[in-house]
Structures are given as C-alpha cells and as structure tokens.
Image (cartoon, rainbow, N blue to C red; front, side, top):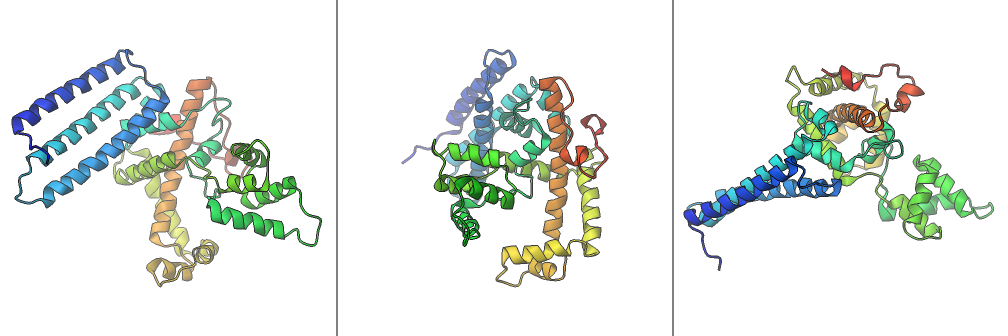
Length: 343
C-alpha cells in the first residue's frame, strides 16, 4: 500500500520539482540546452498527456468525497506544477523562434500550439514549399481520403475489375487509374509503395493507398486552433475569430438557400444513416446540419491561418515570397490576403 505523504513532505518535493523546472528554462533561454524539433514534438505531446492526467486527478479528487485525500491532492499539485513548467519551457523556446513569435502574436495561439506547429511543420524550397502541401499534411484538404486497409483492398480490386474483358492491366496502369479516382499524385503513391518493399507490387499499391495521407498529431493541433478561434470570435481584435464568424454567417445563408443540396445528397449516400437523427433530417431537406456548417467555417479560418503561417515561415527560411496558392495563381480567386494584412 502507498504511504500517504504529509503536507510538509509534499511541499518539499514540489520545491525540488520547481527548482528543476527553473533550471531547465534557464538552460533553454541561454542556449545551454538546445532542443531539436523531435524534442519539441515529445514535449508538446507530454504537455497534453500531463493535462489529461491533471484533469483525471481532479475528477478523482472530487469523487473520493470525505475519504483521506492528501496523496491525491499532492499528485494534483504535482501535475499542475509539471504542466506549468512545460508551458514555461515551451514559452522560452518559442520566444527564440521568429516563426513561433509571429504565431503567438495571433489571438488564440499560445506557446503550446506555436511549439507544436514548429515541431511538425518545416517550410523550405524542397519541403512543404507550397501552402497546398501544408493543408494536405495537416488534414485540411477535404479531397484527401483515408481509405484504410479494408477499403483500400476493395478499392483496388474494384478498379482492377473495370479492366475485365480487356488485356490485364499492368501495375502502372492500375496505379494511374487508382490515382485518377482518388485524386492522388502518382509520384506520391510510387514513393509510398517503396516504403514497404523495394520492388513495387499490387500488395504495396494497396498499402500505399491505405496509408493515412496526413499527420494525425498536426491535424489534432489544427482542430485545437479552430476551437481557439471559435472561443475568441467575440473579441474585436481577433482577426481569425472574426473571419470564422463572418464565414459561418455566409455559409449559413447559402445553406438556407439550398445551395449545398448536392453536398447534402452526397452526405446521405456516403454516410448511410441507419437512424433518424437531426443531421439526417437536415440532409434530407437539402441542407447541411449546423455542426457541418460550423466545421466548414472553422476549417476556413484554420486554412487561412495556415496560409499565413506558411508565408511567414517561407520568407523567414528562404528569404523570398512563397509560391502563390493554386487557387490564386491558376484558379478563379483573385484576392490574396497577406499575413502582413492581418490586424
């Protein structure tokens, strides 16, 4: 059985932990300790794990009622202390990174999110050199589909079956046909196939198509960014919060005018609703449900933020303006809001 700590013993341990935290932050500030992007990824993950532990401990403390809770209270104080230390350490690191400094200047972006972005995103001439690649990496491209193992195997079999009655397709023909239907780039699929075996095969093609096409932790981080913008939507100084609110109003008006009825019909086909839900009723009436509109508006604000983050990172790392987004350079859009115009 665990020995219950006295309040004095717990306080003594906290003093030791706090001192270690202060020494760590000083080392980061003075460059005595240099942290890599892999280190920062680990620390950001540790922060969210610690936050989850602290919330669970708080719930446990509330649940035990009148039972002795000195030990649980000590764990809660320790969890809070470690969580705050991680915050301060990441704040110290992001204060030395110019791209993170810009990110933290945005209302709704704190040191944890800024550090997470810096840890998962590197922008250069050769890597994530367009904002489209960043949107895809962050899981913000709605055209990007994660098939998974079972669906990928069935998908390749169905595509192969389309060649029945003709000459058996070569692996390259099968690959090109799959890429055309999934809107994936053939060179990206070929590269993914080589991760599994040096010699391309149909089995490797299935694995490549089944591979998750985005960074899961970065996508989760983008969800947190979107939620932050929602929380500050009433702040008149929050450019992205205001953008979210305006976009939601615009999307809602179009939705009520049944301009998304084709998308609503597609959602009904794709999701195959078994039960009568409020969402299903909205889709059946040719409208997207409120949660769908909320998600669209939030994704719009997040993608705009990522476009500006990419611009700042490219200029910082490369020394020149990044390539224009495809929708500006080749599409029908003409307005390109620069990061410097955000206020």
